[in-house]
Length: 320
Image (cartoon, rainbow, N blue to C red; front, side):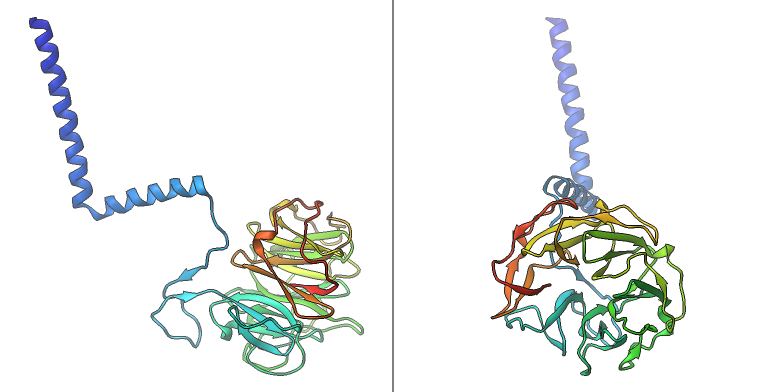
């Protein structure tokens, strides 16, 4: 009986000690805000691992400085639709027009530049010659231009005047034209599609920097149908001639050198473009009739050579 009594007292003492330790921990949580935040952060990290990241969520940044914009409100990165004659509207209830040429994401229209196939660029808010695409002017150090005949040129951003209308981006040879332009950094990759079945992945850091009024260097492709500036965390939208679309991670492609043949993709591919994580829709521009808006959820992630799901049965001119 004496031994049993001592055991019970020991157990009670241990229980009391555990309760006192628990009480001290809970009191510490109540009294210290930093401890509470650390617990919340840890719980959210665990939830993120289980649920995964929803890449379509809108990005909201507080107090992000934008040239010419002063506000203490949250700045939301929005989708802007670029048309051949400029900027009509951002995403919303407005209808999509058939002369849509590009889609970009920015915090302000003042940061968007449009460019022409003849190698001029201007602020998207300015009217002028028909443009073929747009890009966001941010704090990158370099500017890259790609031509239809396979030339690529990287120049310092400091050489350009972003407020100038119809400033020349590069020197073009006779019969050549610009197919892509964007600001970039050394941690970016340039994806080139030759219009057949090959995609070339080049590291910006490996490309020679030259003056803006040069023709650049040969990429290795005799012709380039499309280009995209990406990171390994991005996805590329591929669409075949029979309007079947899919997303393929950039990391599925290995880095090449200029002059290489690139890597094979699905047969009869017609479209390659970067698909921003915040996008909700794909715009199908038909030969006849109004544009078709396809929900992003209809597009699945598949490998380089796989074929995607049908986007439309109509004859189209382009898919953006």
